[in-house]
Length: 290
Length: 278
Ligand SMILES: Nc1ncnc2c1ncn2[C@@H]1O[C@H](COP(=O)(O)OP(=O)(O)OP(=O)(O)O)[C@@H](O)[C@H]1O
Ligand SMILES: [Mg+2]
Ligand SMILES: [Zn+2]
Image (cartoon, rainbow over all chains, first blue to last red; front, top):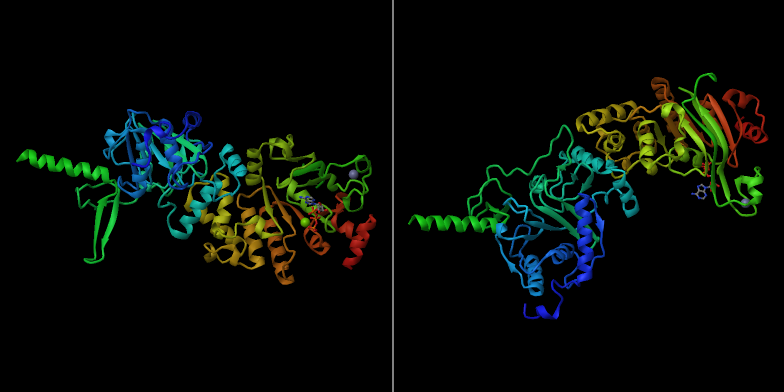
């Protein structure tokens, strides 16, 4: 944090022209849910593939009074999350938090927080592969035409193949969704468990792919449907019967931890901020009782 | 038969590779369809045809005579330079389908036509199961009930005499004859009114050829699907088609009942073709 001084850089690192251009792309994306808007991805002092798409979205939206939360697979303290926070904070001076409810901008990789997000919150998701049709055709010109025609046969064929050969049509992460009955989009590699959180949500979801130079969005209260065959309805990962060993939470998304010494299997909230908050509340309650 | 309305017909279909010049625009009798001045290739030139319900129309001609290009044009794999084509079931045969939107083209490919390519790589996705290859057509036509699509795929495999337990196998591990069978089952998945078949048996062993041709014959009888069969092999055409069109240098040089053409070929080229068969 000592190496970057706020005053040596423009607020939020990017120059104002770049931020304005990205904000225009965001508006375009919001206007057409699920539609991938190309943008001129900027160079950042962080390698592409490390969340540069998300960072650019966050940087172009953040103001001095915002409160930021950054998570990586639910974790506030991972190396990736910490280095993104460091870059944003040192060039903006904004406060950070691990409490989802306190943040107005949350940047995330691979998870949507457990606590439902509100209208005054934005969740920025980092996207490695924005194009759900990429496995169908390698050429951008072709996939653009397929989106324009709402021609998603290829995606359905891949799901059918999975069902036929592996017994399930569902992908572990990044299971495609239909946004607003129009565009099929990748929700970024969130677990299927999080897919329903996109549907008719109060918050704005923004998706940024730095390497692929694409921005897309799910505006508040948008219909978002996970793709599934009529006779095989969409299913989340089954978290039934599991309990967080730290906070006792149930019906959340868990990380599974295996202790090779005891051979035991534990479950722990994947959303560490949520888990911590619950632990603190439980502690406070106990102390209050005393 | 001639009094019935065709299922599909084309008028003045031309496919040109190159801009053309004053010379080749006015000379239609170009050697191999190639302009000696500007080197434009007139792959298909001013072709008229009609296929009647339940009939097999054969197209025969030497290599490079434009047979594949004509089929590809009808299946939208190739853009026509000019001309028209109609389907009796598409806007009652009143709309030229060659210039419709990409969405309409997809609709026509999935509901109105089936295609079997000479090269199975063009018609099949080799790294998907044969079941998914067949289901692609069902999905494209709006199928979203996986169980029903699996049942239909099994039924189709059975129809083309592939053991149904090979549903999950990829066609890349199949023999050439089996790959053609998968292509055929895919092509008839939505029981279209017309099938387009391009050199389906070329490259297969003779005994395998005969079996695939028998299968096509039986499908044609059973489902009453009209077919356009392309082959450079007059023996195949003789075995399969009711009527035959002979192409040379992109143009149709002779057309008629297959028996008639074999017995009494009018065009010089057809005469050499027929004599080589004897
Ligand atoms: N994409 C293309 N660009 C340029 N020329 C082409 C193209 N496709 C086909 N041609 C030419 O058009 C002519 C007709 O080709 P086509 O493949 O239709 O012949 P064919 O009758 O199917 O021959 P074969 O029996 O060898 O399959 C040939 O001269 C070919 O070289
Ligand atoms: Mg050919
Ligand atoms: Zn010329």
